[in-house]
Every structure is written in structure tokens, then in C-alpha cells.
Length: 180
Image (cartoon, rainbow, N blue to C red; front, top):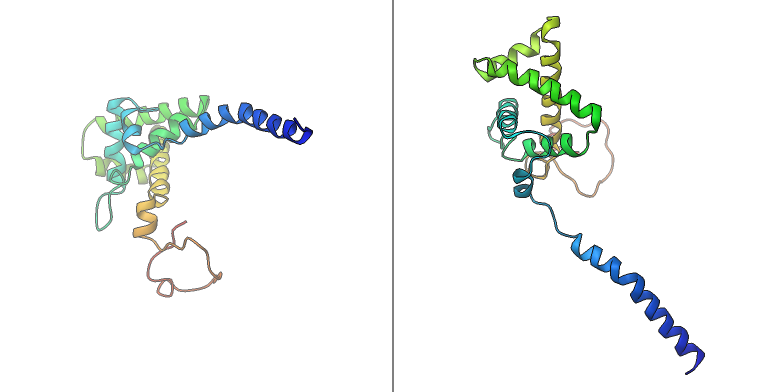
């Protein structure tokens, strides 16, 4: 055997030895997560809490000429973010706040009216409930506007940016706000 052939075969063997485990990882790691899988496996909320979360985000962003928050999966995103991204103290703080919000809503009354009253309530006793509501509301709006459905169908969307124009009217932009 010539020296060049030995080096060539050595490179093949080394490449195969190193590449095989990497290829199996890449092949098995390319399974996309679907929203259906996310619904089946809650990351943070219990079943009752998740039902209440859906009710709250649909009250914040109901279905009109655009889909509701639950239609685009905002409740699933909130569950996944709080369950998988938040850590330790953040999760326990979020849980305490959400439990206070749940107790306030479960005391009875119209959910919309209860949430409206939290917007204007200035009492110190309702601070935790109001803070929890504002956290859910902030997440609901942010995640709603960043979904593909809303970004591409209800907001202006430009996948490849063009020229930057800083001061144009809404009419010049097509009558819609821009997707992020």
C-alpha cells in the first residue's frame, strides 16, 4: 500500500468514528415540536390553572376580525416560557401571583369586569393581583404580536428589510402596524 492510500483510509475511518454519533444526534434531534405536543405536556400550569389562563388571555385578546389569543396558541407559549425559561425564584413568584389572580377571578363575577377593575385599582391590598394580571397581559400581547399568524396576516411583514424610513405615516406603511 502507498502512503497516500494509508492516509486516505485513516481519514475515512477517523471521520466515520467521529461522524457516526454526531449524525445519529442530528437525525434524531430534528423532530419538530408541535403545538399539539405542547398542549399535552404542560410545563408549568395545572389543568385548572391552564383553563383559567386560557380564559384570561381570551378576555384580554378576544376574537374579532383577527383570531383570539388562544386561537394562535398564546396560552401554550406562556406555559412553555414560564415552565422552561423561568427559573427558581421567578417561577415561584409567578406562581404566587397567578394564584392570587386566580383566587380573585374565582370569587365570582364577570371576568372582563374583574380585569377592568384591576386596571384602575390603586389599593395596596390588590397590588399582588394587579401585578400578576399585568404580567399575564404583557406576555399575552407580546406573544400574540410575535406569532407567525398575526405577524404575516394582520401586520405589515417584510422578511427582507428594505430602506429605512424613519418618519412615515401609517397610510404610507399600508395602513397597518409593522410586525417585529
